[in-house]
Length: 354
Ligand SMILES: [Zn+2]
Ligand SMILES: [Zn+2]
Image (cartoon, rainbow, N blue to C red):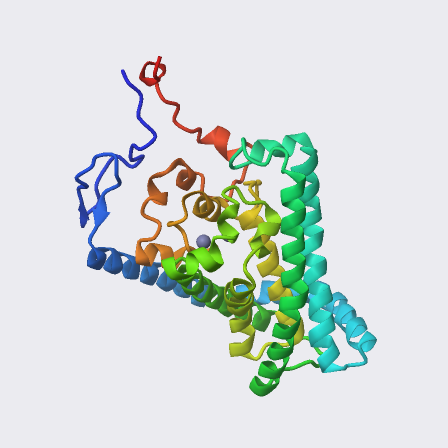
């Protein structure tokens, strides 16, 4: 019996509201209205369930969180106090120099480790987690150096003035630089707002630069890497760096009037998240980078960030959802490589040309 071709639908069934495609090799299409209602229904279900669970367990959850924070809270308060004193509480230098040093340290610490792996192939056992194993193995030095140069340019010449604008916007909004850190629960709540704002900001700004008028001039550069590596998260045209990489993460802190320390925490998480999404490795216990890696491979799928809510809502993940990459798109809770757990479908030898 002939084995399934790679274009087969793994689900093998049609859901209500889906239309049969005229071409059997393509995934079934859903009408826009049905897809929209389906997405709304699912969103309500997820949000509603989370709300009920949160209300039911609110007291005990809050108590446990406070216990965790209580144990390490003094430590973090001490660290922040040292930084605050070092800058003599100067809010301008804290925002500009502090944010610059913090973001550079986080980004390059993670990326130097990934660059060593991509250049040397060591430690070898990590290569099992490569998403596109045949690509960048090892990464071409000249290409890597050129990418590093552009990333550093974006992080200094382009980001510097943006941080100055951010400082003045935050002053207008009114936010705290105080010595005292916000409560753990409040930081968690602000993180949630930041993640949602990032998702919306990144999806629409990213989809905008995919417009044919802007793609060639701006976004094509980022897509030179069909198999990305960690630093490619910030490898972009300067305009895109401001619109897609810097502004969406700034929305949350600006809306909430976050404490500077909360903003640093969030920027750190956002930088590690984009590094992971572009790393080219699906490591165990890390959020799955399969969706954005697939975006670099196919260009017109998965415009959103980690959550993928807006891709689902707009149907811009329809092709992705019938691929092996989608089946692997979960956080791996074992040390088995996802490609080994869910292997690619190999074409039948008879089907190959002689
Ligand atoms: Zn990308
Ligand atoms: Zn893109």
